[in-house]
Length: 219
Image (cartoon, rainbow, N blue to C red; front, side, top):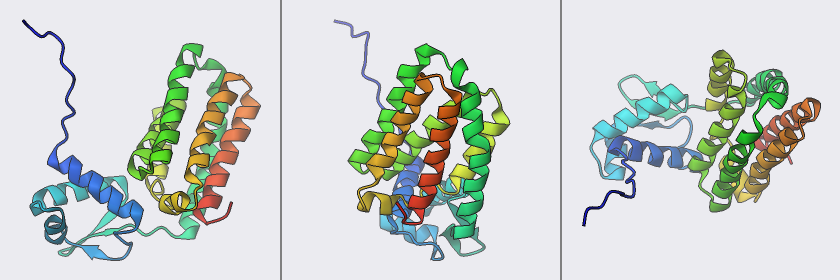
């Protein structure tokens, strides 16, 4: 008998596996801002050679999560409160009006997929998988901004989010707030379905503002 169908097997390189482990260590606070980590020492911790650690770290450098320290290694990028305020201010200027503008042009046929993406954020929050939560969150917001057909807007917001996407999530999870934050994305889809641009702009604006408040430990 000839089998013509196979279950796809996810291929993950050692570099990607190490990258996931590093992200998990950053978001959990195991790797702290200001501390210099060398590729050999991290490789010994993960049981791998320094090469995939160095490659994964360079990926994180491009994402803005870590920075290189000449002749020493890498350290987690520190984010000050004023940095968060500035990033939030820029996101508020860009995201709410852009999503509001595209509200009526989002095809009805796309709404189930958007709802599924929003639910994935909730599911990852329930599971406590912070790394996959941030990825699901990134994909959702990029998808919404993508309806603008403005690549510069998408790239700009992606760059802004890259500097904060792991910030404070461990605290939200510990306080039991992460699931409620995740469910805000379902509410955004519900509001988009109403085709009311003003309501969409308001809910996206509130989502970004409340996220900033939660970063600071405020409800």
